[in-house]
Image (cartoon, rainbow, N blue to C red; front, side, top):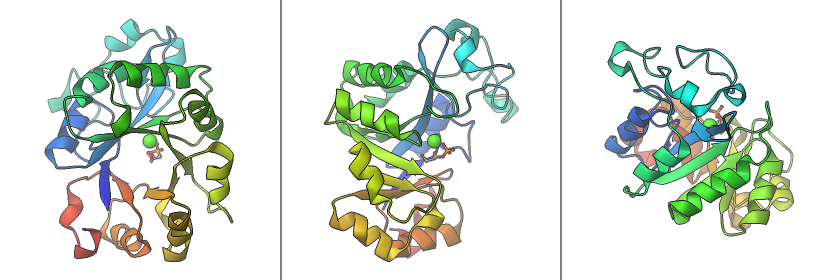
Length: 240
Ligand code: G3P
Ligand code: CA
């Protein structure tokens, strides 16, 4: 079972910052998960929320702010004084570092609550520029984004995120061409995972942070998990 550091290593460093990604790498994660949004001047930046209020000393919507305005803000102090001065990373800055590693990366496109027309194309352009497509997969709760990605690049691997427990989640793959299913951990059990596997679909679950959750998804036989604590590989033998 692969462990992907959720928003880097959110349990140890401010989420979606370079400190967080470096921490996940240091802890031995197989890969990192990150969320992307689009600025007013159409730069792809890494941030979970569509507003910056929770994770910075600024306020407002990312879509209404330029990259240079965002770069003036502190995205670390809210987490702890040792992270003061941490900047919001662009996807380009992340990929420039990522290409020097042997990690995998799951880029989650945060279309949905707010729609960023054309974000899929910008993300694909950057992946191509840094030539890291083989180690990257793209996910979204907003499934039209996944469909667009496949239309633009049929080789880019995609994962369909969903929060509910649908009767037939495989329909998401059929309709979007997604390669992976990314359900909430409570949605899965062994027969469910087997159904996906039979069809060659990988299952990665979010967000696994405590022993009982590890145990649950390990028994279900999922392929990968997203965790805020990507060092907890040794929490139980069944997770190995
Ligand atoms: O991709 C898994 C997980 O990150 C989805 O939920 O809200 O943490 O982006 P969220
Ligand atoms: Ca995410």
